[in-house]
Every structure is written in C-alpha cells, then in structure tokens.
Length: 478
Image (cartoon, rainbow, N blue to C red; front, side, top):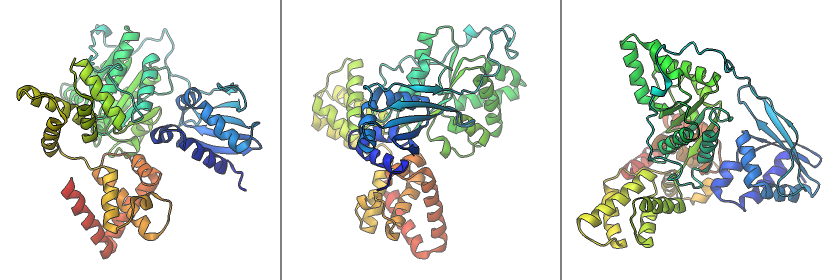
C-alpha cells in the first residue's frame, strides 16, 4: 500500500471532492500541493496566506475529516505558505488534527520582503509643486458596489480578495490584485466596488480608476506635449491605482515601460495596485516579461461564467433595485436561456421589460420566449469549451466522458488535443481553465496540445482534414 504524500493527498482530494461543489474544489483545493509525509505529519503547500486563511475559516472540518481518515486520529498537518513568488519566502504553520474545530497554530514564521522608501518623513521627490492630491477625482462609478455584486462560486475568490484589499489597501499579500475573466463577467464592477469601499473606509486616500486605453492616450498626449515627467509624477501620487483592461497594453512597449516605472514606485511605497484583464497573466501576449512578473507578485483571481443559481440571484437583485416585480418562472426561464455572461443576462431582462412596456403586454414565459428568440439571433454567440467538446466528440463518435478521462489511447488523446486547440483559438478562457475542463490538465499540457495540433496539421494530411472539418463546423455555429 502506497503511503507517499502524493498518494495520501490524492485520497484526501477524492473525499473532499465528494463533499463540496466543483467550483469550490477547483478554487481552493486543486492549487494545494503535497510536499512531504513524515510519519503522521503531512505538509501541504498553499499558494498564499489568503488561501490558507480561507481554508481555516471555511473548510477546516472537511480537512480534518479527510486527513484523519487517511492517517488516523493522531495525524498532524503542516501548512507551507508561499509568501512571495519571486523570493520564495515561506510561512509555516504546524497544526494538530485531533483538536477542536478551529485548529491551533504553532511555530508561526513569517518572512516578508521589506518595503522600500515607505518610511515616514521621507519627502516624495515626485510631487508636483502646487498640485494637491485632493484635486484628483477618483473616476469611480458609484453604482458599482459590493452590495449589488452578487457572489457565487464563479467569483467567490475574486470578490473575497477584493474585499480584503478594500479593508487594508497595500497591507495584504494581494498587491497587485489582478482580476481576469471574459467579457461581461463583472471585472469592471468588482474593480469599482473595491475603489468605492476604500474611499468609504479611508476618505484621505487618493483612489483613481482608469482604463488602460485612456492611460495610453494620456501618455501619448504627454509625449506630444513634452510633459512626460508631469504625467509620471501625477500617477505616482495615487494611493490606490485601478487599471482596467491591461491586456490593451499588448505590443505597446513605451506604454509598458512607463507603467512599469509607475507600478514599481507605487508598490515600493506600499500603495495598492488593482488590475483587470480579459485573460490570465500566462496568456497575455506582447507583454514584457518584467511587467508580467510584476503582475504575478500578488494574487490573480479569475471570474467565470455564473452558474444557474447565481444568474437567478443577479436577476432578482436587478429587479429589486429597480422596484420591479416579475414572476419567478419568467426569471428562471431567462436564467436558463442566457448563460454567456452577466451583461447579456441584464440586456435580456431590459429587452423583456421594454417589450412588455411598449406593447402593453403582461410579462409571461411566452413573451420571454418570443423575446429570447429575437435576442439570441441578434447577439453574437460565444462558443464555449463544453460546446467544442461536444462537436469534437460527435465528429469522432465518442462520449464526452471519454475525452475527459485519463486514458492515453491515441485517438482519445488526439480528440482532447483538438478540443484544447480550438478552445484556445475560439474562446477567451485561460489555458488553466481550458485544461481544467478537459480532464483537469494544467496550462502546460494545453500549450503542448496546441503546438502538437499545429505541427500535425502541417505534416499529416489526414490530420489536416480533421482540423479543417472541425473548424468549419465550429465556425458555422459561432
């Protein structure tokens, strides 16, 4: 019988997976890595202090049950917490398993990178004479608050991290906080929510929201007007900088250089940086490596498509805030029909209300069906990884479950690689998200699959036919 750390933790994960939702399992337990097993003591590495604290607060009973089931009642757990990805400082917490619900922490060691230039009394050399910080407007949209940001499995990590940042800007390990996800999933809403919460808690802090596109245009204007220094100095005054859609920096070397300079200054001064992107840092193309490394210093949290329960809650919240009543069966029909993102879901609701008001018709499921038919036809359908899997499996006449299995049969591996290849080309999912939906593979496996498909398409005529046929099928639907 195998008693390695990997084997014990695999068995624990099977137990955990049976007792929580798939999204919670993916978010909180998949990133954990078993490091070693010494007798009854198992050491697990977690990616950040935030993840450790979340496990302690929400899943300690589950962890206790899983580990004692494998190692017995005298088992012990050691957390190894990665505090800084570049310098590899660790925080280690030893925990006795057979204690009460909240496990006691022993031998706590913390090594944190020192902050540079953050001491009081040192004058900021970048302050522009005569420019008062109170004159800087935050550019925040006051309609985007935590109160109307509906929490679900699809966004729980990002929202929790955002709220933690809002309570202690610049004072958590999530600096920068990078929130990424597809169009209409709430990145901008969450970014504004963090800024608004910080302004409420810390009125003296200077918070600024700006889109990367606007930042780029301001930089171009500054170069044209020979006022680059003023531009840089202005941004270095900010206490909390919220930069939206950083993927638009791609290929703009000079803009990346100036943002790198501003980012370094803010980070060294202990100021908070919040970023949003439509893809994960590993998928950002055309970015300087030194800037990407900065993006990875803190926490990267993804926003995924909302599940059915979250979509229903979003609709109810929208109706409540607008003072509108709607039958539950109509709300559920809308939630079932629009699955792509929050923006389209709210657009469908507005269209239904307009149809009812303008035509003076009662809001019913039948009216919703008529509206949905027109709405979906006029909306560009975003192909999902699930749909790509179905098309590929239908083409090769195999069940989807087989594609997601661990089998290494050549034809199954080939179908899986084709799925990953088209998912990368035709969706905005991160490589990690694609891999997770294709049998819990990592992003490196997805990259390998994409390279393999590209190479085979050039060298194998029969395989090229597969690629062309599937491309036609998927393009016709999209």
